[in-house]
Amino acid sequence: MDYKTIFIVDPVKYERIQLAKFLKQESFTVMSFVSLANAFGKRTPIQCDLLIYVLRKGQTDLKALERVKKKDRSLHFILMVQHTDEKVELEPYREMGFENIFIAANNEKVREIAYGYLAPDGLQSRPETPHPLPLP
Image: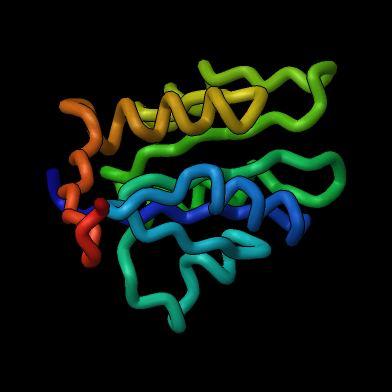
């Protein structure tokens, strides 16, 4: 498994950090941003493999996804919906060229989709090292 990078874009700092900790693995670099402009600005030289975009009423712009898609066509997206009453239709986005776009309603679903895409063969197991002091 290759080393992968995940970008999390969420305007709410606490929830952004909580999701980053929830997804953390040895083989992933998780970076969090307030907006898509920060994530794909000139000061971010790292390319991401997966973008998790948290939708919040009045704080996120779905039109910004179109500009990101024009820059990187191979990028995979997860749209995380915070409110269960909010509906997002994926068909218009798939018609615009978003082939790999998913919707998740909670952190567990985000982790399931992310691990399924980034590590389809499963995560690497950690090598077990013996305890430095012998146990009696």
